[in-house]
Image 1: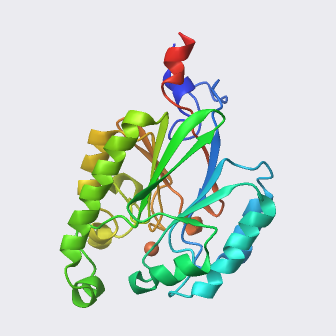
Image 2 (image 1 turned 180 degrees about the horizontal axis):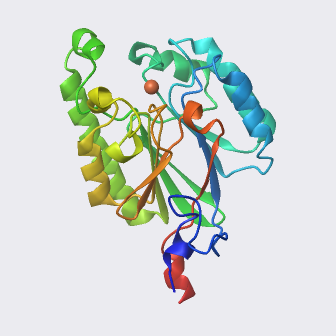
Image 3 (image 1 turned 180 degrees about the vertical axis):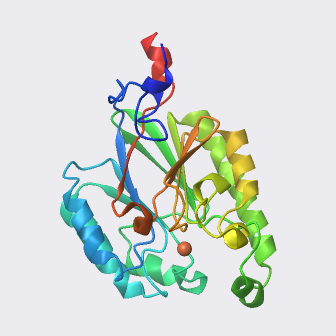
Length: 264
Ligand SMILES: [Fe+2]
């Protein structure tokens, strides 16, 4: 028996070898999106919500919710999610378009959003303990703009990585499902399709190493509009949920791996 078919919602190409939907355990569901760059993709984003009427346990936004730091443009994004899923918790991380010096303003303005900055949100979905660790993430090589305008950016990235590693290790001990949400990509596998000259400014291989070592169940990121939607790092499923790539929100089945042991 191919247990992977039970473990994962779908194979990389979304099909089983038999060409039929694999039998699968349906765990709690998380919806995710990123790079809405409101107002740019706002109408399409709103339409995509209509295609998914069932409320998820959590809605995760992996940064670049707005374009060019426009704090007020996040409002219609959050409102649209609330209108469709009034009971759902909304978790968000900042992207490069939510400028670092405006983070506190976003937090003040949208106090009902769970903003994660190297921090964790714990909840229970369908009886499973879920830990969501969130961060902007880090880059192998800061962009030219960052090197010029953010003093100590290399150091900031190093500190972020250390904090994320610690949070992931702690969460692994006490959660059924561990999810990491970052804006920047975490592996080269989901940025293939982007121009190779900018790969180092889209992801950080140090993050991939941390994921290999701390084994979260799911990683959700954005930022790579032309990348690939899904990849695997060992048993961790990585989702690039950039809206311009998917043209839809991502529906992620959070089947906990240990459920398999409960079954057999
Ligand atoms: Fe971005």
